[in-house]
Image (cartoon, rainbow, N blue to C red; front, side, top):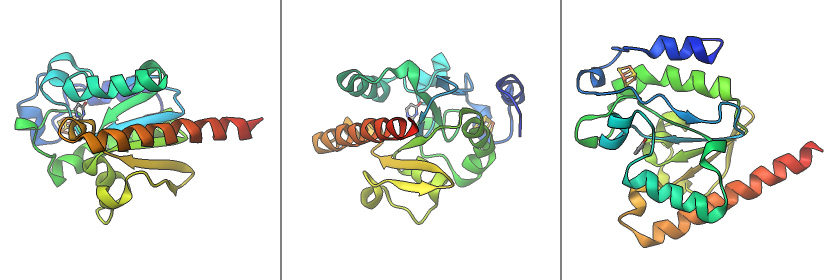
Length: 189
Ligand code: URA
Ligand code: SF4
Protein backbone atom coordinates (compact mmCIF):
# COMPACT_ATOMS: atom_id res chain seq x y z
CA UNK A 1 0.00 0.00 0.00
CA UNK A 2 1.37 3.38 -1.01
CA UNK A 3 0.40 6.28 1.23
CA UNK A 4 0.27 8.93 -1.48
CA UNK A 5 -0.24 9.42 -5.21
CA UNK A 6 3.38 10.14 -5.93
CA UNK A 7 4.52 6.84 -4.46
CA UNK A 8 1.69 4.93 -6.12
CA UNK A 9 2.41 6.41 -9.53
CA UNK A 10 6.09 5.68 -9.06
CA UNK A 11 5.35 2.08 -8.04
CA UNK A 12 3.48 1.29 -11.28
CA UNK A 13 6.13 2.71 -13.64
CA UNK A 14 7.45 -0.03 -15.93
CA UNK A 15 5.25 -2.62 -14.18
CA UNK A 16 5.83 -6.18 -15.39
CA UNK A 17 3.61 -8.00 -12.92
CA UNK A 18 1.58 -9.67 -15.66
CA UNK A 19 1.87 -10.61 -19.32
CA UNK A 20 -0.11 -7.57 -20.47
CA UNK A 21 3.16 -5.63 -20.10
CA UNK A 22 4.47 -7.33 -23.25
CA UNK A 23 2.29 -5.57 -25.82
CA UNK A 24 1.31 -2.30 -24.20
CA UNK A 25 2.46 1.10 -25.43
CA UNK A 26 1.48 2.95 -22.25
CA UNK A 27 0.25 2.10 -18.79
CA UNK A 28 -3.17 3.76 -18.40
CA UNK A 29 -3.18 4.65 -14.73
CA UNK A 30 -6.35 6.72 -14.28
CA UNK A 31 -7.57 10.28 -14.61
CA UNK A 32 -9.74 12.93 -13.04
CA UNK A 33 -10.26 14.36 -9.58
CA UNK A 34 -8.18 12.52 -6.99
CA UNK A 35 -10.59 13.68 -4.25
CA UNK A 36 -13.75 12.76 -6.14
CA UNK A 37 -16.90 11.53 -4.39
CA UNK A 38 -17.68 9.49 -7.50
CA UNK A 39 -15.33 6.99 -9.10
CA UNK A 40 -15.94 5.02 -12.30
CA UNK A 41 -14.23 1.70 -12.99
CA UNK A 42 -13.97 0.19 -16.46
CA UNK A 43 -12.33 -2.95 -17.79
CA UNK A 44 -9.05 -2.10 -19.46
CA UNK A 45 -7.50 0.21 -22.04
CA UNK A 46 -8.36 -0.15 -25.73
CA UNK A 47 -6.18 0.93 -28.66
CA UNK A 48 -6.85 4.67 -28.23
CA UNK A 49 -6.29 4.57 -24.49
CA UNK A 50 -3.07 2.57 -24.97
CA UNK A 51 -1.83 5.27 -27.36
CA UNK A 52 -2.87 8.27 -25.27
CA UNK A 53 -2.39 6.86 -21.77
CA UNK A 54 -5.81 8.17 -20.70
CA UNK A 55 -8.86 5.99 -19.88
CA UNK A 56 -12.02 6.17 -21.99
CA UNK A 57 -10.87 8.39 -24.84
CA UNK A 58 -11.94 6.05 -27.68
CA UNK A 59 -15.41 5.46 -29.13
CA UNK A 60 -16.91 4.04 -25.94
CA UNK A 61 -15.40 6.86 -23.92
CA UNK A 62 -16.81 9.49 -26.26
CA UNK A 63 -20.25 8.00 -25.85
CA UNK A 64 -19.82 8.09 -22.09
CA UNK A 65 -18.69 11.72 -22.30
CA UNK A 66 -21.82 12.55 -24.27
CA UNK A 67 -23.98 11.06 -21.52
CA UNK A 68 -21.99 13.05 -18.94
CA UNK A 69 -22.53 16.26 -20.91
CA UNK A 70 -26.24 15.60 -21.33
CA UNK A 71 -26.62 15.10 -17.58
CA UNK A 72 -24.33 17.94 -16.56
CA UNK A 73 -21.61 15.71 -15.09
CA UNK A 74 -18.15 17.23 -15.40
CA UNK A 75 -15.71 14.46 -16.39
CA UNK A 76 -12.93 16.34 -14.59
CA UNK A 77 -14.84 16.09 -11.31
CA UNK A 78 -14.99 12.29 -11.17
CA UNK A 79 -12.12 9.81 -11.04
CA UNK A 80 -11.86 7.15 -13.75
CA UNK A 81 -9.74 3.99 -13.74
CA UNK A 82 -9.74 0.43 -15.05
CA UNK A 83 -9.37 -3.10 -13.66
CA UNK A 84 -6.19 -3.61 -15.71
CA UNK A 85 -3.89 -0.75 -16.62
CA UNK A 86 -2.41 -2.29 -19.78
CA UNK A 87 -4.29 -3.10 -22.97
CA UNK A 88 -5.30 -6.72 -23.43
CA UNK A 89 -4.45 -7.88 -26.99
CA UNK A 90 -7.43 -7.49 -29.38
CA UNK A 91 -9.31 -5.92 -26.45
CA UNK A 92 -10.08 -9.33 -25.02
CA UNK A 93 -11.40 -9.58 -21.46
CA UNK A 94 -8.57 -9.50 -18.91
CA UNK A 95 -7.68 -12.98 -17.67
CA UNK A 96 -7.96 -13.86 -13.98
CA UNK A 97 -4.20 -13.77 -13.36
CA UNK A 98 -3.90 -10.37 -15.04
CA UNK A 99 -6.74 -8.82 -13.05
CA UNK A 100 -5.34 -10.37 -9.88
CA UNK A 101 -1.89 -8.93 -10.57
CA UNK A 102 -3.23 -5.45 -11.30
CA UNK A 103 -6.02 -5.09 -8.73
CA UNK A 104 -3.79 -3.86 -5.92
CA UNK A 105 -3.11 -0.67 -7.87
CA UNK A 106 -6.84 -0.07 -8.20
CA UNK A 107 -7.46 -0.89 -4.54
CA UNK A 108 -4.79 1.63 -3.64
CA UNK A 109 -6.42 4.22 -5.93
CA UNK A 110 -9.76 3.65 -4.18
CA UNK A 111 -8.14 4.08 -0.76
CA UNK A 112 -6.55 7.38 -1.83
CA UNK A 113 -9.60 8.79 -3.64
CA UNK A 114 -12.01 7.71 -0.85
CA UNK A 115 -15.08 7.86 -3.11
CA UNK A 116 -18.57 7.60 -1.65
CA UNK A 117 -19.92 6.11 -4.88
CA UNK A 118 -18.29 3.68 -7.30
CA UNK A 119 -19.89 3.06 -10.69
CA UNK A 120 -18.91 -0.35 -12.05
CA UNK A 121 -18.86 -0.22 -15.84
CA UNK A 122 -19.69 -3.69 -17.10
CA UNK A 123 -19.21 -7.29 -16.08
CA UNK A 124 -15.41 -7.28 -15.68
CA UNK A 125 -15.49 -4.39 -13.21
CA UNK A 126 -18.45 -5.90 -11.35
CA UNK A 127 -17.01 -9.40 -11.00
CA UNK A 128 -13.53 -8.28 -10.01
CA UNK A 129 -14.71 -5.74 -7.46
CA UNK A 130 -17.81 -7.30 -5.91
CA UNK A 131 -17.32 -10.98 -6.75
CA UNK A 132 -17.81 -13.60 -9.45
CA UNK A 133 -21.28 -14.43 -8.15
CA UNK A 134 -22.61 -11.11 -9.49
CA UNK A 135 -24.00 -10.93 -13.02
CA UNK A 136 -24.28 -7.62 -14.84
CA UNK A 137 -27.73 -8.27 -16.31
CA UNK A 138 -29.34 -8.91 -12.93
CA UNK A 139 -27.22 -6.41 -10.96
CA UNK A 140 -27.27 -3.35 -13.18
CA UNK A 141 -29.09 -0.37 -11.78
CA UNK A 142 -29.17 -1.81 -8.26
CA UNK A 143 -27.22 -0.14 -5.46
CA UNK A 144 -25.00 -2.37 -3.35
CA UNK A 145 -23.36 -1.09 -0.17
CA UNK A 146 -20.10 -2.62 0.99
CA UNK A 147 -17.77 -1.29 3.67
CA UNK A 148 -19.22 2.20 3.52
CA UNK A 149 -19.02 2.54 -0.27
CA UNK A 150 -22.09 2.58 -2.49
CA UNK A 151 -21.62 0.61 -5.71
CA UNK A 152 -23.78 0.90 -8.79
CA UNK A 153 -23.19 -1.65 -11.55
CA UNK A 154 -24.19 -0.51 -15.03
CA UNK A 155 -23.47 -1.37 -18.66
CA UNK A 156 -20.02 -0.90 -20.07
CA UNK A 157 -20.15 2.06 -22.50
CA UNK A 158 -18.95 -0.19 -25.35
CA UNK A 159 -22.13 -2.26 -24.94
CA UNK A 160 -24.17 0.89 -25.66
CA UNK A 161 -22.67 1.12 -29.12
CA UNK A 162 -24.48 -2.10 -30.00
CA UNK A 163 -27.81 -1.66 -28.20
CA UNK A 164 -30.14 1.34 -27.98
CA UNK A 165 -32.03 -0.05 -24.96
CA UNK A 166 -28.82 -0.22 -23.01
CA UNK A 167 -28.24 3.46 -23.76
CA UNK A 168 -31.52 4.29 -22.06
CA UNK A 169 -30.66 2.14 -19.04
CA UNK A 170 -27.16 3.60 -18.82
CA UNK A 171 -28.62 7.10 -18.85
CA UNK A 172 -31.09 6.09 -16.12
CA UNK A 173 -28.26 4.65 -14.01
CA UNK A 174 -26.17 7.81 -14.30
CA UNK A 175 -29.20 9.82 -13.24
CA UNK A 176 -29.54 7.57 -10.22
CA UNK A 177 -25.87 8.32 -9.40
CA UNK A 178 -26.55 12.06 -9.50
CA UNK A 179 -29.61 11.66 -7.25
CA UNK A 180 -27.65 9.54 -4.77
CA UNK A 181 -24.76 11.99 -4.78
CA UNK A 182 -27.12 14.88 -4.04
CA UNK A 183 -28.78 12.90 -1.23
CA UNK A 184 -25.40 12.13 0.35
CA UNK A 185 -24.33 15.76 0.22
CA UNK A 186 -27.66 17.03 1.55
CA UNK A 187 -27.37 14.66 4.55
CA UNK A 188 -23.97 16.11 5.36
CA UNK A 189 -25.48 19.47 6.40
N1 URA B 1 -12.92 0.46 -22.15
C1 URA B 1 -12.57 0.36 -20.85
O1 URA B 1 -13.02 -0.50 -20.14
N2 URA B 1 -11.72 1.24 -20.38
C2 URA B 1 -11.19 2.21 -21.11
O2 URA B 1 -10.41 2.99 -20.58
C3 URA B 1 -11.58 2.30 -22.46
C4 URA B 1 -12.46 1.42 -22.96
FE1 SF4 C 1 1.32 -4.32 -14.33
FE2 SF4 C 1 -1.32 -4.07 -14.39
FE3 SF4 C 1 0.07 -3.68 -16.60
FE4 SF4 C 1 -0.20 -6.12 -15.63
S1 SF4 C 1 -1.84 -4.83 -16.42
S2 SF4 C 1 1.71 -5.20 -16.35
S3 SF4 C 1 -0.18 -5.73 -13.42
S4 SF4 C 1 0.18 -2.43 -14.73
